[in-house]
Length: 111
Image (cartoon, rainbow, N blue to C red; front, side):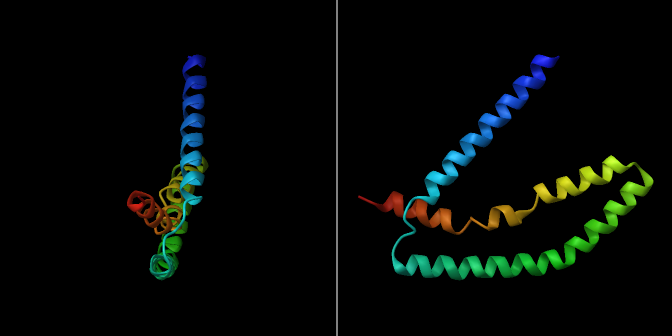
């Protein structure tokens, strides 16, 4: 049984390392010409503005549900709910989703 826990942790660490390696490799690529950089900046600002507006409405709901879960079920369930809500947050994805496709496109179109 202990073997499977250790194996799961090792596989998770390897997967996170692979993700980090690809992330930094992609971040090191050029963003493209000035038009591409300007357009990706505009899209990035728009995405951040949208996410701020969305989270102003979602966070209070998460707080209410967390309190209800914690009071009615058990304390660890509320903590688990907050952790799940945080990890499924598109903010983590959208913070980099504009830069990386532009950089990937530049690499693919390079001779």
